[in-house]
Image 1 (cartoon, one colour):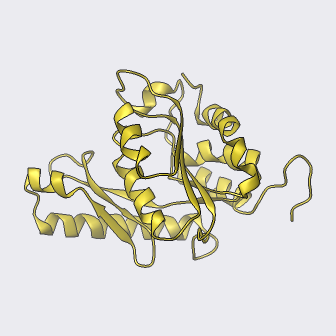
Image 2 (cartoon, rainbow, N blue to C red):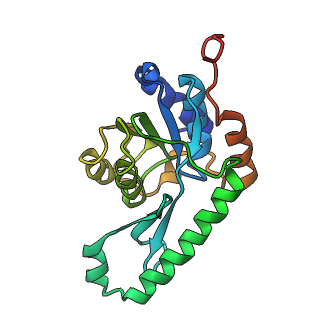
Length: 222
């Protein structure tokens, strides 16, 4: 069990040091992924930004993901067509959910970023961090949307995940780094002693501090 997201991030950073020479970009899935990604970015001397992704919930169960909306120009909607057909979800619900989640993405982008545009990922090693993965649907959407922006390599990095999610992501990301995969896997929060909700102001403060590269081992920034 991890004490909190900061400790999980520091332990995850040790596993990711091999990417230091790639001059990577660290992208966190907000909000819970940000305090995990912060120690990773600091250890690698990498810039930290967020990748804004919002789950598209099912009509009677908002926690059941039918896919996700991912920021971009234009935004990308990655849908689970099989599940949508199985649940007989109508097009009106999908359209309304996508509009609602896109509005939240726009709100978060305006709040979290001093610059209007996300960091360019083309040709870079991108490390995508969250505090954990249960089903993998949201992270899958994030990776698929990122792939269209031509990164050199996509690395998914999390402290904890279900084995099902890891299997799902193994064929999508170039590498998946996970510290633990407990069985049975009930929820991400079960791997943390302190799993308090992360507030917007904490995300803003962290991004303001780490959006630009951090000098490593006392070296001056390039």
